[in-house]
Image (cartoon, rainbow, N blue to C red; front, side, top):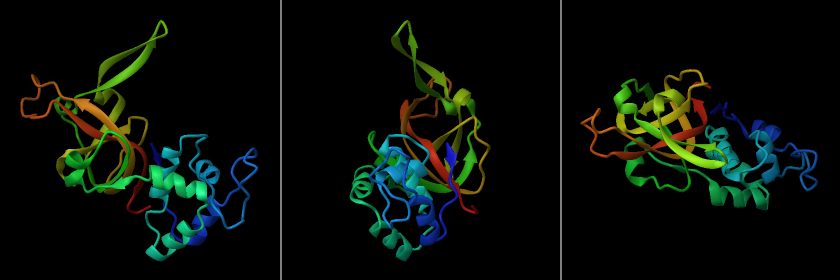
Length: 209
């Protein structure tokens, strides 16, 4: 997960995004008042995967005024507009997450975070590794890989953040895709759903950033 300080103005956003892309992006030009998909990927610090740059853009622009956001969207090149139209994350409220989220696509969730510490509630997540060039999927305890946060006290709205990241507090905006988790019914009898979705976070911003 990468913490993103959101842009505070259109000028700041354009200074970061209108960057010319990488040296081999001959069709992108810095300071031409146009933001291409290649420039989005450069600012998001990725080489490919436009779905990831779309999540970055959504978080980085989350604090712009409606007017500045409209002006910025008007400066997106055709390929960047296509990226956002195809991959732009859908914002859900924590209470609607479990019922409204679908396997494909990415989502924005925002709320007050609380670390989930009950190991029985953390459950398991599928992890695929290669063994003798054959993919093998095993169930791994979530707590070994992730810190789990509950949002706004909604028990069925939880996000996964890599253990390598510092602990978060306060109100946080998360962007990510879905990861299916499972609960051991023998250890956590209160669970009515053995399998469920959590948001696997790619980018986030805290309220005071």
